[in-house]
Length: 316
Ligand code: CP
Image (cartoon, rainbow, N blue to C red; front, top):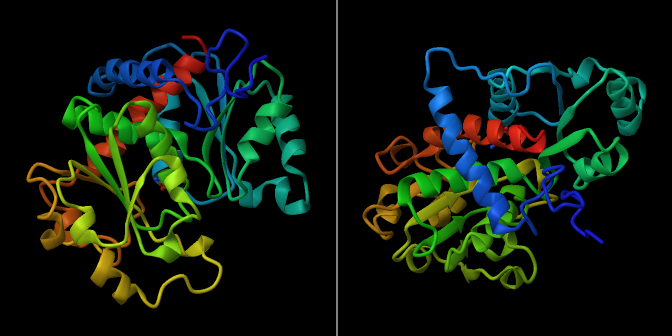
């Protein structure tokens, strides 16, 4: 029996819910397919007919700038019809349940749901519920997973560093509340990164995080030494219950990425951030806009990566 709910009985991707447990050939196939779509996104006419006639529903129950917009652009470049459900103006506000909403949209012949929700497991719930011909992509669920963010991060790392097998990668900041960090750790591990460090104060680390195979540092000076790739994280105040930190000034002093702290990493280290950024809290503007930052290329690559995921799910 196939235990991974995102794979079909042939071991192919049916839904994309998490990077955890996804075999390396599937991750690499997504990255390689995205590579072929980068060319499409750079053409004058940025469209291919792969998803013509398909209906894709963006269900964003939490705010988003990058993920929702790049999914919409990606779907349109694949020639799909895209519906962005306005959640605030939808019948959710009258008490309709999540699954009733999904059933009604399925009755409108939905082919794919892209779901962001504050509750961990929301996308899994929908994936278990829908008919087998409908695909579900998790666009971020609670603290749990954000698989397409991790995949576009992997694409960006491979673009600049070519190979995963000789890298030291540091994930810096609010690991405890981060779905991005969890998805990154699983993807980096599967793709063969030999050393993954997490750098954070104790209050922003999950219990027993070492079990994920990462090395724990509480100090930027030690943690950034010889690092090739820095994955910065946002302080996720909206998921913090009570005070996890003395103050944002104190946080910036010890964990905010400045040019001075960045100079402790390798000279050619690259800096990623999933956005939205808190400038002056987890990252200084001089670094965010500096020559080692690949934060905006991440966003651009996100279109090709999301095109790849949608085309693979639909077998095109
Ligand atoms: N990285 C990310 O998920 O950004 P958005 O919240 O803007 O989609």
